Amino acid sequence: MTLAATPVPPTGTPPPESRRRSGRPRAAATRTLIADRQLARGRGRVLYVAVLALVLTLFVLVFLVPVYWMVTSAVKAPAEFARTPPTIVPESFHPGTYALAWEHMQIPRYFLNTVYYALGGWLIQLAVAVTAAYALSKLRPRFGGVVLAAMLASLMLPAAALLVPAYLTVSDVPIFGVNLLNTPWALWLPAAANAFNIYVLKRFFDQIPDDLLDAASLDGAGRLRVLASIVLPLSRPVLGVVSIFSIIAIWKDFLWPLLVLQDPQTQTLSVALSRLANTSQIPPTELMAGLVIASVPMLVVFLVFHRSIVSGLSAGGLKG
Image (cartoon, rainbow, N blue to C red; front, side, top):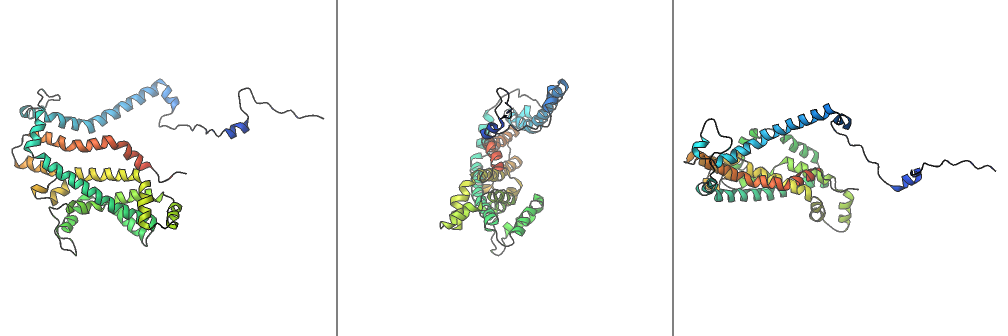
């Protein structure tokens, strides 16, 4: 009786069966714009470093130089600020300009106005965007696709083209005949009709399995209970992104508050700074200090939550 010879794997190499049973995933090859083999060459590495340095330099010039100019201009003396050619590094340092701007330009009042408008607009935008996205994603009303297409089509229109219709609407609200000028609702209601936020939330809600919602319905949960107890807790990342976008949009907006908030007592910080710069004897260095103060809150918000913005936009509802 002759036995067939069984091939023996080389020493240190596990048999194919054990490799399949081990369940170890294969390392995926990383694809980059420039191959590793090209980077290993001297010419390829030099070219890569040169392009990277050029991109970083352009980024600094375009984005960071204006910020640097604004911050340093505030601490210069008025005579040095008006000098031609301008000084890159301040020859004199006057940090007290920020305190003077805070007092002379009544920044605390307008700062609180802007915070009030931002928080109120954030709550109203969330309420409208969440309910609209939930209805389009999970309730699937008749003609829902047409409504969504009309919302997305509004994103194709330039914002300047909507200023006059929006102004006429808030100055004389159809059916009700109410004038909303110089009231917070002139900012909150137009901001609530944000098709981008609705689209982002709808795409996120689409990834939540319907089986999970059906199971909750079988347990007796209504539509609102499903939204509050299941959909919203799963949507915390994207809700954070929408919240940050909403607050930043209201805080930095200038043209629309300039049109609808004509009363100086109700104006936002950006509008008040522009008005004070044109109607009062405010030194230009104090104006620069006021602009820095108005920019700091949103810069802090972005630096703290920039990782949440990226992860929230790329997150899905459930995995697996």
